[in-house]
Length: 244
Image: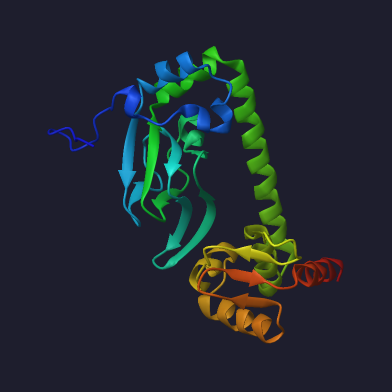
């Protein structure tokens, strides 16, 4: 991708070289013609693993759609201390909050892996919302879903101790294994430092608890995945903690 010689920023690419907006759920109702029209006013940006897309309190208002790779929203409290607010993959939209309320970014966005995003300028995003009520409604539904998820996280922090927050996070991040059994997996596996960021704990605390779960044969770590051998038991422990 070519860069603007004066600013170093990416130049808009022809619409024919850009991925479709319709791969994102909120834009799924666009016609092919509308899709091409909006894409002509957008551009792509490629990021390397670890590269920042936007920083906390950045004044930019662009909206992003992940086309390849993974982008993570992170809130940093101090040097070496941060909380993962969410991870976004192909088809996910992010950055829309600042485009809606015209305020600075509420979190940093960073590429977990090499990634490509479609950048929708704020003015283009507003034009789409004004012209397509169905897109605006779908966006409201997405925001409502995220608020509910945030409420769940707040409840988790309020009512569960560290180890039960870890169990809950393992269950939330996992998916059913494709062998028809009861096991769930997190693939690729997260390192203990990443799990600690998800639950607001230290890496050492997570390492101790993961070792204990491994001894109890509830969790197994392989080179490709964290395997939850008995997710039902983890759920039971969370329920007992909430009841107690």
